[in-house]
Image (tube, rainbow, N blue to C red; front, top):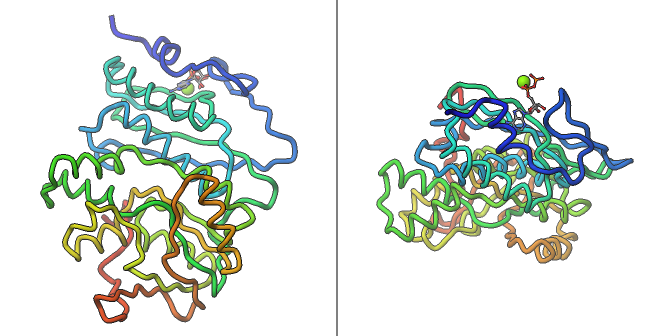
Length: 323
Ligand code: ADP
Ligand code: MG
């Protein structure tokens, strides 16, 4: 007999609570926020065929659905508290649900965030998650704080998720172990939550990279009213990406998307504190450029171009309604 809506929720999406006052099962969940903290709230929707391929293993999909939301909390420097899960499912298929819930709840456990409710309906496979986090008042990292003269930093490595996508599309032919490595970046991103928290009071602005470096940096520049110079040769990349053709590397690094690394700015006098935050959180960071006055716009310099700036018109950020 197939599983009903409420059995399904009960079996897979009602983990024991540690902190929330009331989780799923009633009309509302109840949480007791830490007195004096601000709540940070963010939502991300993942649609099959748009945000993930139907070939992805359910366990990895469960991980990724929560990871992309945790990445938004990380960008704000927030501490994760709780999340809700809205699921549209073609079928109540336990062969999908069991590993999906396992991947999702294993990541939740690791970041100490509780599933407190949601909604479940039949329909095309779509996963909507809303995360709640906490920050001390006035200390959330925002996109609007970058100042001319600030260093521009990025965590981890860029471009592997896009390279994996091009592998799936058949545009590049990657050796088996290389494909497996970049596929991990695409399907199992690691949200930089500890780094985000460590950068509170250190970074002047931050954003998480979901739509490609140039596009997401553009959001920071517009919100902050500044320009930037980026050094292409400094962009951190995996050995697999570094072995690809120059043009493809550029595309993956600058316009890749799905990186879920943190891009942030900090006054040069804060560089020691940035390195301390990197050490404390076990997350590599690299200085990749500098914030300039707005009049400079956004320029990307590369040694291969004799130090000239690249023509950026062909690297546009991903836009669901223009793609
Ligand atoms: P209502 O109709 O009152 O909105 P539902 O019948 O949709 O409530 O849901 C019943 C309970 O199950 C609620 O407490 C809801 O939060 C929880 N729930 C529903 N779907 C999920 C899900 N995918 N994950 C976790 N909890 C869920
Ligand atoms: Mg409902």
